[in-house]
Length: 314
Picture 1 (cartoon, one colour):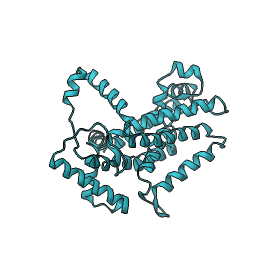
Picture 2 (spheres, rainbow, N blue to C red):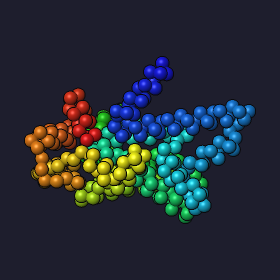
Picture 3 (tube, rainbow, N blue to C red):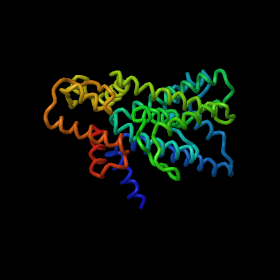
Picture 4 (cartoon, rainbow, N blue to C red):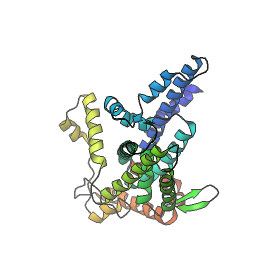
């Protein structure tokens, strides 16, 4: 049984989109952390030892300058770190639900940069707010990164229909507005003020990310270039050789380029030629996006969902 589960996980990680990979990474780290907690708990006569807290805080984001300077990796590792079941469950559900929408509309290649940058800005908001307000010394969790994706989805497709349990069909903009409002009033909460500031920081970046993309500024590009540079370094490839190996997609029609982002977004890094096959492919993508806008994602056929999913990975 466990071999089958492991094979399923490897297959999903290898062939799934970036949302799936992020969910798997977060879930794997959650399992690892709690196994460490269990082992230390059993080895310490049924009590959580201080060693476990030291281990956890080693990867957390801190509100103290000295800890941030001596543990700079915590700015990034904290956004993949969860300890509580409900914390990781809701974060991963939100990441999956809203991440699919973002990936469908602006491309799978922008999910990871949005996640990382949103988490980074969320951590910055937490750190700055902690200098003026009394709150927890450590922060962990993907909430800031996830809120960046949630608000990006609402900004991209505000009239997108989601079906909620016990409520029915609700437009995405209202769901996002409620989530942001809950974080605003959560600032006055005594137990998670820092978390609320981190959520709002991520939310603000999500809106900024989409706004800049519509102006033709792709904030994901520097992150993707940096990640590619790291990959090429370990592969032993020079930047010029890696650049020659990249596939290139070009568009002739400026209107088709804008329709690629739900008929309102300016796409980046395109030239002025497009084959008939590519134009036909783009027209079908635009048609499906229009159908989603009018009737919601669930109105798509299985074939249309699969086509849109494959198109988002290009």
